Image (cartoon, rainbow, N blue to C red):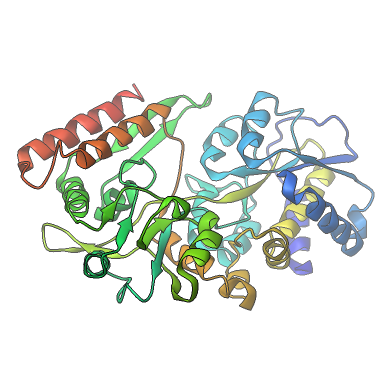
Amino acid sequence: MKKQIMGLIAAGALAGAVFGMNASADEIKVWVADNVVDFTNQQIDAFKEANPDFAGYDYVVEAVGEGDAAGNMITDVEAGADIFVFAQDQIARLVSAGALIDVAPENAEIVESENDAGAVGAATVGDVLYAYPLTSDNGYFLYYDKSVVTDPGSLEKIVADCEAAGKNFYMEINSGWYQTAFFFGAGAELTYETDDTGAFTACNASYASDKGLVALKKMIELKSSPAFQNGSAVGEGTNVGAIVDGTWDSGAAQDLFGENYACAKLPTFTGADGASYQMSGFGGFKLLGVKPQEDEAKLAACDALAAYLSGEEVQLARFEAVGWGPSNLKAQQSEAVQADVALSALAEQLAYSIPQGQYPGDYWTLATSLGDSIISGEIGPDTSDEDLMATLQKFQDTCISYAE
């Protein structure tokens, strides 16, 4: 850790572009979620003790959650935090606003080699690494009753086992978040680009394609099973054999399944074209950003602290303190994290997922409508490929219109 921090110090002192001044050259303001304020203060004390060269700064930790940090930074970069935790879908806006300084090449090599690929991808804009990965713990995977499901690796077998046992299989197909498991898994694309103000400027979409048709047909096939139930909350399920859900429901899932509690990455599915596809979807990550500084010495201190707070030891300690899932590869392999079967399943799934970027609010409503058309039977097994493709084309055109 010390070697890495010293490398970051040197790189920080040589950092290039300068985008603004802070209220105090001797104060380093840190924004984190309320439930980790005490933890972060403790870690900063340890950092100062291990790095006396930086002990002279006044470190001020404030409770600003990752959901609010980006908006606050963009509103007033100068008055914002020097180091802040933010949700990965805000990174493009933060870069455009000049609220993030890029990670120096030698530091980027450390970050990229020590964190999982999904988290590194989430911290990257274009080819540039702009943040330190902090967690890999937001996404979805499979919870299942191992006395019911004999092969969690195949969607067809999961559904068949649930049907045979008279159990339900839950997945929320009328959600723009969960729905992408099929579309992205089949190879279809739907992403947005934004300008400096965060306005949507382009939509990269290929749902109206053979790949999109494979995904839509599979969703229709799933809905046709008597075992299928639309939903994604363990606590709201009944007679559950398996459910696609996230780590936030791990406690409820353990209570529900008891000794038969089990987790796995999302399964593969066989498309109407006979090919096998790995279900994909969105992944979510918490990132730690450093604001550009006019004072190079202060930038070095910020870089060093960011490296420390995002390093293996602190990520593992944070997991043990508040349950945040590490992005650090070694921390993920620790006995404590490995014992958390939900986090292990999610970590495996995130390798097949893409970081959730920014999407227009109307996209989520539109995706719900698409799923509802399947659930209601408006489109179903008897709908022609021509009509299904027309549905996808309309969906895609509408998505593109949000960026025009």
